[in-house]
Image (cartoon, rainbow, N blue to C red; front, side, top):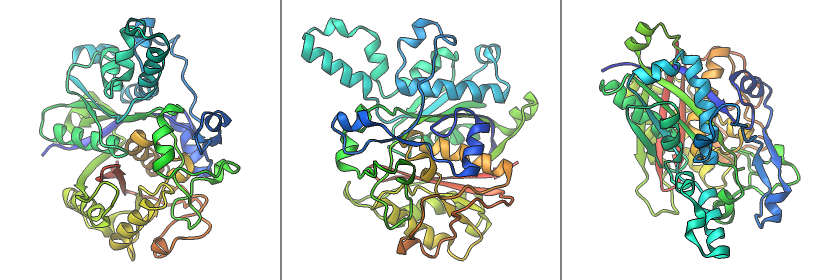
Length: 405
């Protein structure tokens, strides 16, 4: 079976829009969460959101490309530019070679809501224009980026809730291992618009600690009252190991394990045993034991219910082991469809710089997590083998294992 390595990374997030800035934010435990009064004025209970700037694409892309892009596609484009640059892949290479793209993206709301609003007011579908379709499709990211970057290989959007980006990486790993592709751009993107939170705000437990935005995201804390919505774009270039060596590419990390599972329960219920199953499959795939893992970037997002599920799974597998367990979502908020890819990047940055980012805002440990080894301040040490765990609404679980190179 062929080996899969990371040769490029790019990020556009609330804690930075380049790898260096993001690294410094992780080291400092610097939150990217703000209070946006317009969200409350629009009818949301929560005004909390990740502070993700919209990129100015005018100097970078012709209008014909910009016109069809959703907010998610804009973020993904900025991240992908960085990833390809770090990987040493330019436009000539993309035009001449069979590169693929797989991105996690589960919902696009801006185009749909704006289109529905226009129809109600004007009652004329012709006013929507052709670009509305491309801005509204769930696959908006991949359909837009595939044209911009001249993608000729696999072109696939993975919709798996908050595990979308993780599964995009896992699917790409599988294709590369089987020799079906040599290079695939993977990642995830998520809008931060008000429209994207209307349904989640009412039913999915979003924090309403509007007066203390940077303290609102509280994974594993007894005072958590829900996750904090965030977003942006994260991209990685995955490559077959020998192909990367032949290109002379710098190898950043190696992906060695992919595991998955589904809870198989009613949609409003969870089974932590299936999170354990996902992690166990990834360990088996990587041919390692849980004792060899140095750090787990868990799915804990401050959700009242899901944090309990996550903590139980971590307790079963990692208590008494060397692994630190933590959640970068305390700093970034919950980045939804971007989560799996961004967590991989955050974790690789820790591996490269020999530190474990703190899980901030953890003042009162929830009982289910009391036995876990959680760093509330930066820990400076070498970490070589790490795991990223995510779960998506509808009970899809994904675990990835990465190894330092």
